[in-house]
Amino acid sequence: MLHDLVERLITENKFYGTEGRRGVENLCKIVRVLGYKDPFYFGQFKGGAIGDLIDFLEDNPGAITAIVDWISGQKSPEWEEKLLDELGPAVEDLDN
Figure 1 (spheres, rainbow, N blue to C red):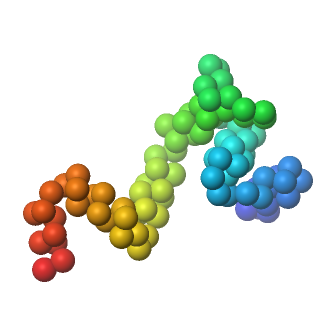
Figure 2 (cartoon, rainbow, N blue to C red):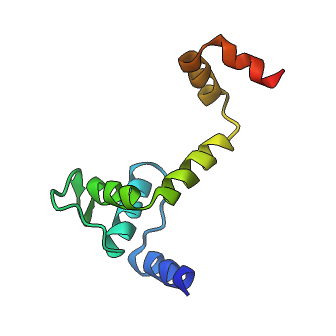
C-alpha cells in the first residue's frame, strides 16, 4: 500500500529524477509530504528545503543505515582511495 502511494506521488508530481540536485530536491519534496518540514526552511528551493531531508534523517536512523550500507556496497576505487587516505595504510591489511 505505502509503496503504491509513494509511486503515485512520484508519478503525479513528476518527482522522477534521482540524480544530482534534482534528485535531492525530489527526495526533499517527498519527505515534506510525509510531514518533515524544517521550520527554518534551510536550503530552500521551490516546493521544499534541504532542512526537510535533515529532519527526516534525524528521525529515521534506519535511512542513514541504508545509505551507509549502500555506500559500503559500491565498487568505487575513488571512494576506496579517499578512505585509505583518511584511515591510513594499516587499513590495507584488511584484505589479507
